Image (cartoon, rainbow, N blue to C red):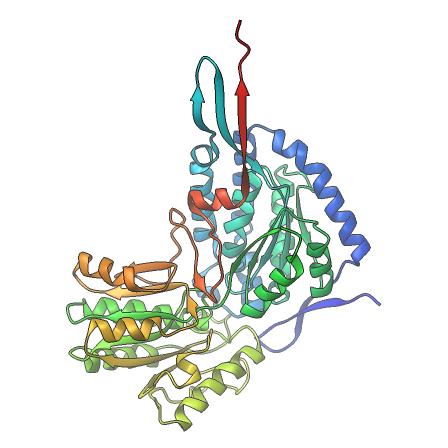
Length: 460
C-alpha cells in the first residue's frame, strides 16, 4: 500500500497538501538516474553551472506571493513578513561568488620534474534532507553549492513544508538544470534509511532533530558515506553591564520570538547582568505584550501559530512544568490562544537549569531569563547545555567578547547581534547540535573530496 505524506495546516488543522511516497524500487531508479546524469553535469564549465543555479534561484524569487501564501498555510508564518527570498538569494549568491576560489586546485609544485596538485572533486549524488522552519533558506544552503560543485542533488523536504522541494525543483528545471541532476523526492523514513545504507549517496546533509541525525548516522554506519548534521539548539544570550540595553532587548527578544520561536539559532535562554536585569525584563515584557497572535493570513498578525499542534504541546508542557517548579510567567494568555497550535508567547523568570525549559530544546515562543553577576557565572551557564550552535554576547568591548567566545562550547559567537546566518562564515555546531559545516569555503570542501595528482614529467 502506497504511503501518503500529508501537510496539516496549522491555521485550521486541515490537510493542505498530500503526496504519495516513492516505493523503494522507484527511489532506487531515481538514484540511478541521478548518478547517470551527474557525470555530464560535472563536466560542464563551472561558470555554466553557476549561471544555471543562479537562474533557478531567481526563478524561485519570481514566484513571490504564491510562496508567501503557501508558507503561511504550511507552517504558520505571517504573510506580513514576506517569504525567504532575501536570505535565499543572499546565501546562493555568496556561494556563487566564492565558488571559483573555493574549488580551485591547490598547486603544490610545478617544476622541471614534477607537477603536484590537489583538486576538488564532486562526491557524486548529494542527499539534502531539509527542515520546515525556514524551508527555502535551509535547503539552498546545500543545494546551491552542491550543484555548483558538480554534484547531482536529491532533495527530501519535511512533510510540514511538502510543496517547497517540488517548487524549487520546478524552478530550477524551468531555467535549464537537468531534471535528473536536481530531483525532489517524496520518501518515508524507512526508504530513506535503506537508500543511505545501500551507498546511494556520496554525501548526506541533514537538518532536523537529534533523533533524526542519529538515524542518518545509523543508516550510514559502515558505508563510509559522509554525513553532515545540524540538529538541536538551546542558544543563549548574555547581556553584560556595558551593553546597549535597548538594542539587546530588541534583538534578543526578536531572536526568541520571531517565527513563533521556530528558528534554528533562535534565542532560548538569556542571562542578564544584575545591574541591567530589571530594566531588561521590563522592556522585554512590553515588547511581547505588543504582539498580535492570530491567523497568519491576516495583515495585523505579528505571530502566527506554531507549525504543528504537537510542537505547541511540547512548549506548553515545558512552561507548565517550569511554573509548577516555581518559575514566574509574565505574559497573560492571549485571546487567540486556542490550546492547540496558537500559543501565547511567554517570558519566564525565577528559572533554573533544573527545569526542562532551560535545558531541552523548546523551538517555540518561550524564553527563560536569569540574573548573573559575573562573566564566569554566565560562561558556566551558557556551556551547561548538551547543544552548541550559537551564543549572543552583548558588550561594548570587542576583546572581552572574543575572550568569552573562546571559552564557549558553540559553533558561532555573535557580538551585538543574534539569530543570523552569515554565508561568508561556516555554519557549524558542536555537541548534540551535530557536526560538519555549511556555507563559506568550508561548505564547498564538505561537498567535494580532495584528489591528489603526483605527475612525474618525462625528461630526456
